[in-house]
Image (cartoon, rainbow, N blue to C red; front, side, top):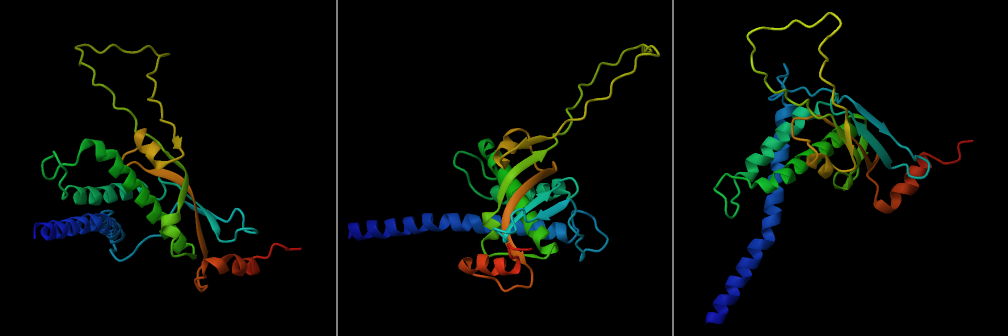
Length: 246
């Protein structure tokens, strides 16, 4: 009898662990979609028409090897033009709201362990980039394939770090006037930092709310075509874009 009870307990325990990742993934997707819907509806950006979504700015799409790989696209996004600072901030807020509902061993309810902060920042940055690419493809009439979103590769990520805060100087009783030939130097403008991965960008100071630019590669086809199977994509696209153009 005891052996049967032990077996049932083991099965229940195993099943609960098996479903945990799927549950967490579902929550993450919901949090991201909520953030996207908030921004698209104008709740965070204060647009006059909540039903309108403006065209994505700062986007460049090209097919660098159209002859040999007509389904390969390269997409570059200017984070300042596309306003990815506010977008990433809202995505991060939604992700952290979900994270605070989870119980981490050794921490009070609602507390996210400090060593996981960078992990959540990287996740928010990654999801912001992927969703931006999908929107860029839609607005430029490029139809993604079934696995395009998860197969996106980021080849370069850059951001301009915010200027460092000046230390407050003690007020002096008398202000000494500077000579005519001496003028206070303006604070230097920070230069952009470039990295090969989002993880490196986060480790070197990127935080949600800071605009970031990136270059990525993905696969798609002109909108309006029937979605092709993996085996038939290259042949069909090659017929549309023949290599011999003489």
